[in-house]
Structures are given as C-alpha cells and as structure tokens.
Amino acid sequence: MIRLLLPVLLLTVGSAALSADKRTTSQERQAAKDSAELDKRLAGLVPGKPEQCIQQTRYRDSTRIGDTILYISTKNDLYRTDTNGGCFGLRRGDAIVTRTYTGQLCRGDILQTVDLVSRIPSGSCTFGAFTHYRKP
Image 1 (cartoon, rainbow, N blue to C red):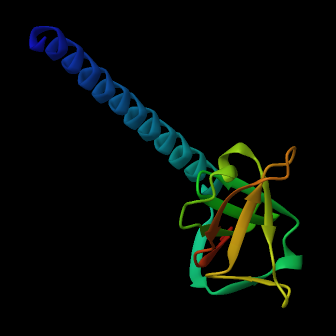
Image 2: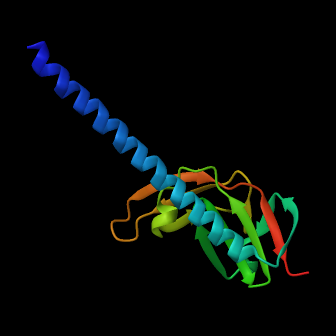
C-alpha cells in the first residue's frame, strides 16, 4: 500500500510546486511589464514632492498600471499614486468608486473596484501619496 501511495504523493507535491513556480514567474513578468509601461508614461517628466491630497475636478482622465493610478490633466501634467494592493479589479479595468465629501482625493482614502457587468465589488484598497509629475 505504501509503495502505491508514495509515488502518488510525490507526483502531487511536485506538480503543486511547479504550478506555484509558474504563477511566480507570471507575476514577475507582469510586474516587469507594468514597470516598463510606467517608465514609458513618465519619461521626460520630473517628479515633485509627494502631496497628501489632489483636487478631483482638475484631472480629466485616469490610467491604471498595475497597482498604480495616474491622474492626468495633460500629457505633461499628471499625478501618480500607488495603492496598497487589494484592488484586484484595477488590472481588469473595473470601475473605481470613491466616496469624497470635499472634492479631493487624499492619501488613505478608500477606493473600491466594481465589476462593470455584474456590479459586484472586486476589491478595495487605499490611495498612497500623490506625486506630481511635470514637464520641465
């Protein structure tokens, strides 16, 4: 009986280890792709000092790259904020829902991602500091 169970056990453990290794390399590839995309978007722009809040109405567009959100006024004027993770829908393109009573987005504010079709929340996270990027 042990002769029969041992190979099955080894095969199961080995395939689980290979599967975890494939996921890790896939995540590493995605992180490298996100980093390259972010570098491309911020090329030629100079970062300013991190700020705690930004006016929500000043920025007409937003772009998501991994766990980073870029709030764009023009291609030469934008803010970058890194979330703390947990917003799994950011990468998929889910809607971003925030609740603000001041017209500002601030560090530590909670944002939710919601699936556009089913309207089911897909994650929540918080904003990090907002860094202003500008063309010199």
